[in-house]
Amino acid sequence: MDRKRRIHQELRNRMAAVRELVLDNCKSNDGKIEGLTAEFVNLEFLSLINVGLISVSNLPKLPKLKKLELSDNRIYGCLDMLAEKLPKITLLNLSGNKLKDISTLEPLKKLECLKSLDLFNCEVTNLNDYRESVFKLLPQLTYLDGYDQEDEAPDSDVEVDGVDEEEDDEEEDEEDEDGEEEEFDDDRDEEEDVGDDNEDEGSGEEKEFGHDGEVGEDEDEEEESGKGEKRKRETDDEGEDN
Image 1 (cartoon, one colour):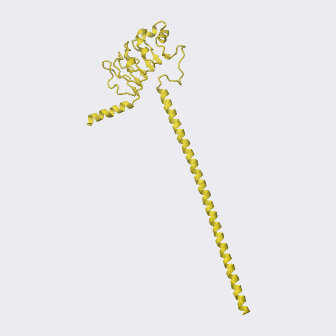
Image 2 (tube, helix red, strand yellow):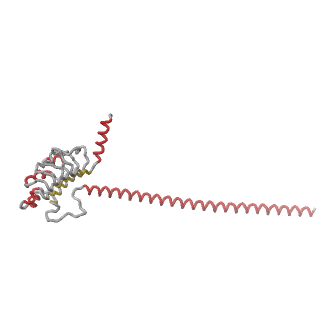
Image 3 (cartoon, rainbow, N blue to C red):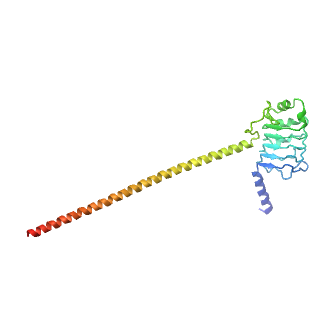
């Protein structure tokens, strides 16, 4: 593999590892953002605030993207490509764009995972029955401009983009694994302590046994000494008789 291909492969591998990408204020060129390609295959969050976009048709295909920030651009419509290129979108922010009619939002019906849509500072928000019309058009929506159909904001602990929920699940799994490892270590320490206690008991018994053995040897020596003295006295007695 030559150096150029090797560098390209390395860059491609690094792109695949990226989950969040912020390109705010990086001006687009004919609706394209230089460097933003379909090689970001695992991208879940993309922010393109104030980059001069007038359409989303040139966005790359990002099959795992869940949160897309497109506020403060000049997008006026042509949202058809979103469902094809970004099918997993759950949160879409189009605040501050040139959207004027409810009909321009109709392509968003194909975004089955869409839960939150922001249209602050778009002309469409000035229409009569704006909120009722959008919720009717997009029944999959839970939140519009930060509020549900009952005009209630989401709980601060609840995320609608799905990204934070997955991260929380991963952290919980890691904590569970750590807890299991700690329990395993504790059990192993207890087993080692029990083994040490058994060794100490065994050593004590050996010491006690050794002491008893020494006592036994002393007793044997005393018995033999006594027998020797007895034989000596008997010999002396025999000598006197003779």
